[in-house]
Length: 192
Length: 191
Image 1 (cartoon, rainbow over the protein chains, first blue to last red):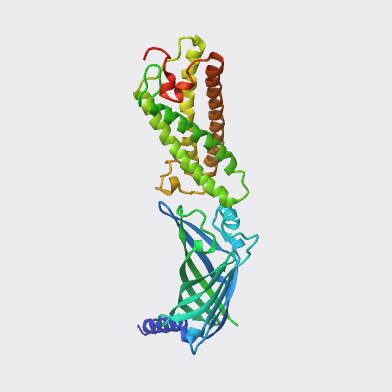
Image 2: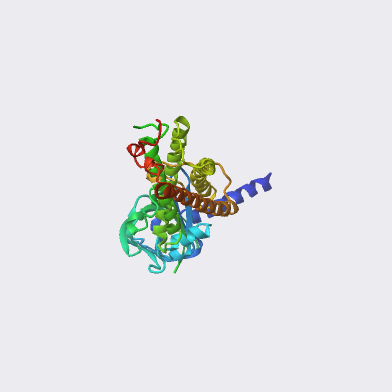
């Protein structure tokens, strides 16, 4: 009986330690983080007329997240995506997306996002506003960010947002395909 | 005069004939251009336009077939020989078959394509895919099938045009002109 109680106590202690390690507020996560490829992903979906959607992801991207502990509003996010790394699982669609019809990677090799403001919306959430530049067109976009946890020197965020592709000369195929690109991103940052 | 008589075509048949001719030949030209153009964006947009006109063509042809079945066909002039009298309806039947088969095969092609691109004629409504299995093999089959049916259809159109020109310039009868306006078919026999 005593052994059973001891085992239960040890289990509860262990889970509470793990829980507290990941349960962290934005203000506690101050520092500069480099986005790591491991544990990070940038996925998107574009709705199709009649249902379903075109799902894709970018395989190559890099960036930094700097969290200002004193004033979250002064935090910064910089992200660079290489559109040549786009993948949908269908080679012909990938070639089409890389072509002049969409990303025009021959003339525009990067998509960049530079934050201009961070507005805290909760203990672990914020809205990041910034300038998104693609194909030489820059527009202001907003993304919802949620801090998922922190462990050791690593931090995890989930980011979501919707972007109108017509703002970036990428509106080919509308209204067959929606003008809205819904992003679902997961970022793991390493401190340093 | 909307309806056909024994010697003349009515406006309904005449308008459908020329509209279908225009769309069919235009579709053939568009089909050749859209897959050869360098810009992928323009190519994509032309393919969607080709699909839209393909559905329009199918609709027009079905209306025309219905009209043909529901009304009399003008007879050929008495001078027309026995062989041509037999060949003409056969070519017309093949033309109708091609006009249905070409857009249908295009519809099959977009339905089985692994790209799964929806069809939205003239951006008005979503046309559902045909209930066919999606696969790369099926897509390749229908690409070839659609192309060859289009070539065969154009060969029949050429044959049809040559026959009409022969009637007009060689036989000097009213077979061609009666398909231009009902009034031009007058005097071709008892109505």
